[in-house]
Image (tube, rainbow, N blue to C red; front, side, top):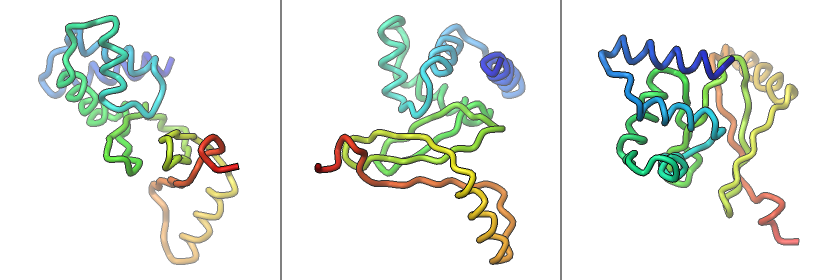
Length: 145
């Protein structure tokens, strides 16, 4: 169901921007939605290239930017100098743990953290509109025994 919403949203966005809905853009969207999250341009390009050798890196890069512009993807930067994209889930919030050794990214949710952020912000006179929590460290695979 979410895939259909994303596809329709992207098609509507292309129309409003005066852009064409091309076969390559459709293939990129299909693979992006199928692949999961935290994909770099290169990750997605390599996945697509196996089945569709005529798709270019620049096309994938530009299309990911379009996904972010229309709201079906969010660009993330986890400190490794590489932009990554994840599908937007407007009703779901999650935070990230990032391994500084191997680059592993783990999503997590904890209502206690969410409540504490609201409490702290309120105590300081803030109303939270949006936030992002990223914790950097070593995963269990990379941490010395």
